[in-house]
Length: 112
Length: 120
Image (cartoon, rainbow over all chains, first blue to last red; front, side):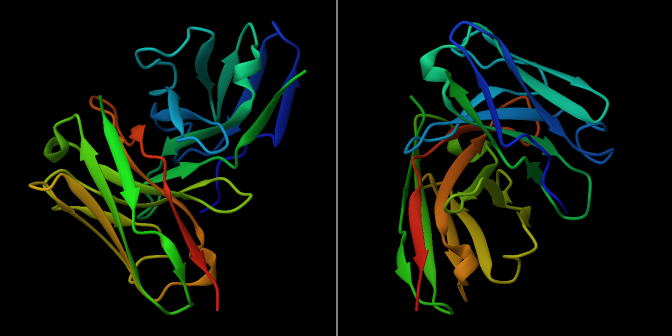
C-alpha cells in the first residue's frame, strides 16, 4: 500500500504561517479520525505534535494545529519560529489488509 | 518521565540475525501497546511492527512478516524485535514507541533509536 502523500518541502519566513497537506484515501485519512503528526529534528526522537486530527498533546505549542477535509489532513504552523525547522510526518490508521498505520513521506520545513 | 531506550543495533551481513531491545521506564508499560518504527537513510518514517498490551496480538508490515518477531517482557518492562534473515533494505534507525492512551494507533513517546547497518 502506498504511503500518504505530503509535499517534499515547505518554507516560510519567521512569524508567517504555513500549512502541510497529507493526502490519503477512503481507507485511511478520509475514513477515520486517527491522523497524527510528528516533528523530527536530525538526531532526535520523533515528537508527537497532533493526534486524532486536531488534538494537541500536553506541552505542545498552540502554534501547531491540525484539521481534515475529505481525503486530506493538514498541519498548520502559525507564527513560524526558527526551532520549527524540521521534518514533519503525517500518519493515519488504515483499514487495508494487515497494515497497522501509514506514514506520509515527510515534509521538510525551512524557516527563511 | 517516560523513557524508552533502544539497544542492540549494529552491523550485520545479509541473511544474519539481530535482536533489538527497548527498555522502558516511567509509565505502566504492561498496559500499553508498543511499536517499532524505522527511518531509512535519507528517507522517511516507516512502521515496522506492533504488539498489544498483554502480547496477544502482533502486527507486521508485509516486507518483514515471517522474518521479524516482536515480543515483550512486562516484568522487565522491555520490548524486543528479533530480526532474522536481514536484508539490505532493513538498514535503518529503529525506534521503539509507546501508544498514546485514549487514542488509536498514535505513537506517543519515542526512544532515540538504534542503528542497524546491513553490509556484506
